[in-house]
Amino acid sequence: MALPWKLHGDGKHVSPDAIVLPEERMGWTRTIGFGAQHVVAMFGATFLVPLLTGFPPTATLFFSGLGTMLFLVLTGNRLPSYLGSSFAFIAPIMAALAGGDDLGRASFGILAIGVLMAIVGLIVARFGTGWINALMPPVVMGAIVALIGFNLAPAVKNNWNATELSGWVALITIVAVLLITVLFRGLIGRLSIVLGMVVGYVAAVFMGEVDFSAVESAAWVGLPAFHTVGNPFADPTLWGLLPAFLPVVLVLIAENVGHVKSVGLMVGRDLDPVTGRALLADGISTMLAGFGGGSGTTTYGENIGVMAATRVYSTAAYWVAGIIAMLLSFSPKVGAIIFSVPSGVLAGVTVALYGLIGLIGVKIWIDNKVDFSKPINQFSAAVPLIVGIADFTVQLGAVVFNGIALGTIAAICVYHLMRVLAKLRGGEMDVADPVVTGTNEAVSAGERH
View 1 (spheres, rainbow, N blue to C red):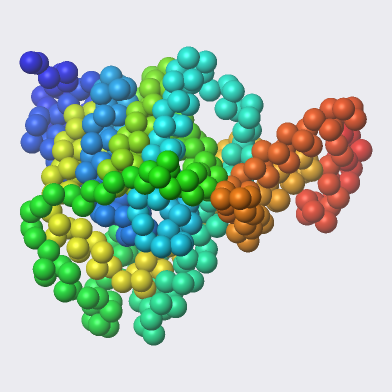
View 2: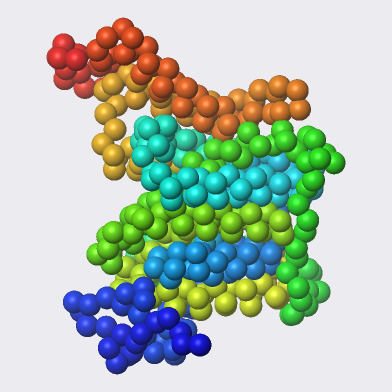
């Protein structure tokens, strides 16, 4: 059977004014090299999620590679993308494991999100994305994404104070991340998180903070550490976990839609018609991960950066990356090395990483020019942020709503309720006073609204 890619030029060079399109490829030696580069780009973030949540790294790598190849099949090899672990799952997984270490409980939440994402993908493929924008305008979407990151702040403090030397290891790690980001350009600069972890890990070794016993006893080759998903019919309390996971769907939608638009702009094509398939593929990938014990997946911005730097958008490189990830998953030694990373290194990385997740929400506001002189936007962002950061909790029977779930509900309800009431009253609401907006122009602007 003939492979679906045609050779770009001589397969060795890309001229300065050209790009390698998704349906093209370089020579196979170079294609394998580009695929390995994508593995390096995704690896730090993909293994960081199981490291933070306790999920098996080998199973996560397996479903990451499998999900990537499935994504390429369902999008007809038109959308180059790598599906790695989504940080949006960290907070709800931690909430699900708060009462014990039964990973099957958290896997049920991941599975449920995968099913919902697949349904959303089918709806988008049929009706487009307009209904998403109506339900969650940028001010709401930004608030939800932001609170998911900021909700994790207490976990950083716990890791920072885990041992006597954790704080020093954390400080070395975060300083390394910052220095690498500033001093290096290209791929090295984009890998500042994982390289900073390497620096922190080496420092932790010298400080006696790393236990190598599990690494020494792990086999070089073996099956990924799969586990079964929890059964909600045998354990009805699993249904109570869903409110904490549901907001993740909104983040995955935003990430996938943004990914499609970004790649479309870079290759000069309208890829919006593929959005529904992309959401469906990510949903099915997340479902498979939920069934087998991997972390939920999403499209990776890190790999978009690699494509922008190399001008190679060939989906063949992503097939290579998916295969390499699956091969790595069959080494328990790899999983043991990942799990040997001490809490101090995690604290140093996550003090920036969780904040960056929150700032993705802020970026949504900026990119969409959300006007925060309007009270409807102010309260739609302010209320859910505090609810999420403070991690308010409400329990109704067996169902527990944590800060992420309550913050999401607050963002949607505050926005739409204020909008309906404003329309019933007639006209727009006055802008807030200058104490809130911080500008004297707000007073005069209020007269114009």
